[in-house]
Amino acid sequence: GFDSEKGRRGALIVVEGLDRAGKSSQCEQLLHNLQTLGHQVRYIRFPDRNTPIGKLIDGYLRGQSHLDDHSIHLLFSANRWEVAPAIQELIANGVTVIVDRYSYSGAVYSAAKRNPNLSIQWAWQPEVGLPRPDLCLFLSISPIEAAKRGGFGLERYETDTMQKRVRDLFQSLLELPHNDEICVIDAGRQFNEVAQDILEPVLECMKNVDSIGPLRR
Ligand code: DGP
Ligand code: NA
Ligand code: NA
Image (cartoon, rainbow, N blue to C red; front, side, top):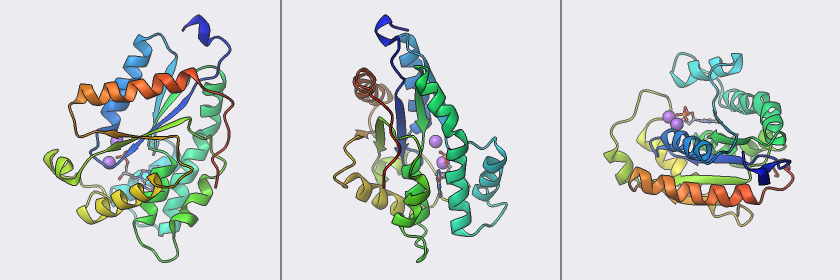
């Protein structure tokens, strides 16, 4: 890494967005770009389907099991909590961590079910105390552009109704005044343009990291 990075912690960079916004490909590209610049960096994604909790989530998403809305919600959150100590350690050791989906997806996808006993406020509570991202990049894509990218897969949330609700809920989160660490990226453009628009705020953020705090209410 750079001499100037010695002793500095890594940054926690979250990438969020709708299904088909290109999150995973852009995360891989960002990983590559940062490594090429000599930074220490890791890429992780949620849900992490490889842990015992992740396997329950995977079965649910594929429609192989049915779980109460609260129950699956808490499993998604537990899946983040089980990885949280490793994230803290990487960051403390100067490694920047790129995270593909995090607490915003957690709150929004569950609230989109419109279960009257599962508000977005309720959904946010189990996230409180997780490592707080230094920067959240929200990859925004219009429904028209999303439709051009081809049909949905077979997983549980990949329906027009669900995606429309998710879009509206993400939008309402973006409008909250304290969410100033969120950077909206127009992901409907050429891949390389989007990648460049992601890299700039990430490098800026990495220059300015300070002590990491917990997620707030
Ligand atoms: P992905 O592997 O990124 O395509 O995510 C799988 C699906 O799970 C996707 O439709 C978004 C959804 N999802 C991701 N995280 C959460 C979460 O914490 N809670 C809920 N309810 N859904 C989530
Ligand atoms: Na997906
Ligand atoms: Na993805």
